[in-house]
Image 1 (cartoon, rainbow, N blue to C red):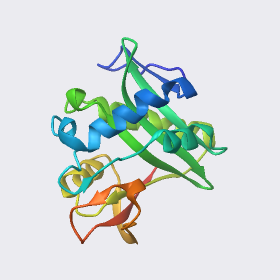
Image 2: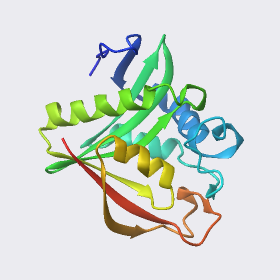
Image 3: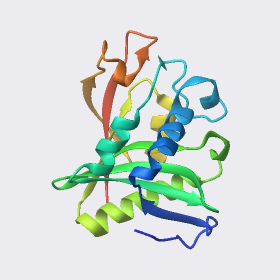
Image 4: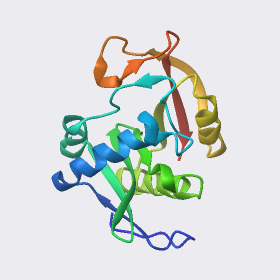
Amino acid sequence: MDTAPATEQAQLTFRDATEDDVPTLVRLVQSAYRGDSSRAGWTTEADLLEGRRTDADGVRAVIDGPSSRLVVAERDGETVACCQLEHRGAAAYFGMFAVDPASQGGGLGKTVMAEAERAAREDWGVAEMHMTVISVREELIAWYERRGYRRTGEMSPFPYGDERFGIPQRDDLAFELLVKKL
């Protein structure tokens, strides 16, 4: 997957994560979604959830999963984004998407998502990309909709009481399935 798109992000490269990436990726995912550092970007969940977003075991599980990969985006040798791809039959699952808060808002997320969709389509021959998003994240869902994802209305409960997913600050959290034809 070592490719660089011919876009304004020409210095961006992609590769699959390795064990050596685990500490960096845990920090990246945490910084993009939780705590004060996440407030530098627009993807923060800090008002919805406290605690961790992932840990080393969670990152390793994606790296080592037989049908998954954790894609790392680097610019000038620095990790600036990542995303999970998991092959699920006729579809791929897109998750653990994180962009460094200081790099958000400049098109990096769009580029990473486009590379993930290309890889899923070409490497696995899937026809759809699936993801789940916390349903109250309207701004984030709107961003995905502008990239061709559609809301399905299919909800799954938030795992209240399981601190591996964070400590909820609201009692109305649920995940909604978003789908895009590739």
